[in-house]
Structure formats: C-alpha cells, structure tokens
Length: 229
Image (cartoon, rainbow, N blue to C red; front, side, top):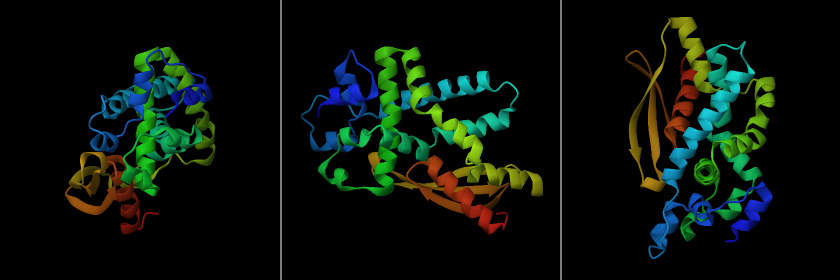
C-alpha cells in the first residue's frame, strides 16, 4: 500500500510513515497477519475522536457567540456522527487505503461505512501525534467543517435523538435516557441493542454497529411508537 499517494492527495506529509499506516490498520488485518509488527487503529481512533470534538466545539463556540448551547450541541453532533465521517472518508478515498482481512475486505454496506468512519478518527489521532493540534485544526476546517453551512441550511442537524428529546420534553416534560440492552459480536465488529426510556418506560429498541447508531435507531422508532413524527 503506497501511502505517499494519500499524503499527496490530502496535502499532508507525515514524519512517521508507520503512524499513518497504523491509522488504517484494522484489527481483522492483524488477526490474519499476526507476524506483522503493527498495532490496530482503535487507540488512535479514541484519540482522534477527542481531538475532533475539541476542534469542532472550539470553532462553533468562537464563530457563533449568539447561539445557545443546544443549537451548538446539535450542530456538533451532525458534524461528528458516523454518517458524516463516512461521507468525508469516502470523499477523501480512505477506502483505497484500508488494511483489512480478506473476509472483511469483501464486506460492504453498513459494516464498511462504520470502518471508514473509524478510520477518519484514527487518521486524526495519528495526524495529531505526528504534526500537532494546529495541523489537525486546519485539516478539520478544510474537510469537515465545510459541511456546516449545508447542515444549518437544510436542518439535518435535527436528528432523531434531538427530535425525540424535543417532543418528549414539550409533551410529557421528560428527558429521554438511553441504556445498552445487549451487545454481541467480536471486538472489531460489535453490534449493540439500545433502549430509549421515558423514566422507567421502555419506548423502543434500536440496533446499530455503534452505541451512537443504535441510540439514533431507537429514537427514530420511538417517534413512530409515540406518533410524534
């Protein structure tokens, strides 16, 4: 895999080339190639998620001083959710550089989308370690925050969770809460079932390849159950 092609496409240059490769190394690839001296990218994903949230939060805080916390929170959620990160990762052609097992490389659909979203976060974690906060700030503003104007214009920041919370608070004066009911599958491909509750009432259950995705699915179903949509 020639990661120099990716560097040129992104306009970045890693001092530590192994760190860049590390960001695209999926757990399944190492399970199939245990002799390789590599780590999978999950720890970088953890770091990149935190870096991304801080940069997006700081940008929203500074650029929209007149906006309330609720609006800023919803905008941030729309920018950093798995669907958006998958879209950006596809646009940057990250799919061409994923190191996956033979079996995983054949899987497409939601499973691949989830891996792509995670690879975006892992890349940010690697880029932060290699080049620092300012470089990540510039990268995120160029490739992720550019989507903010459209999010605000079309109202897509009002996701199912936001809508269900607004309706629940207005209609029954209760803030919904979410609990993981079950999880299954290997570490690299877990699936979750999450319940959304109004106090002790289980309104609906949602499934997803991440807790966030399962929560969104539960909220969407809950809007239908309550006929609030």
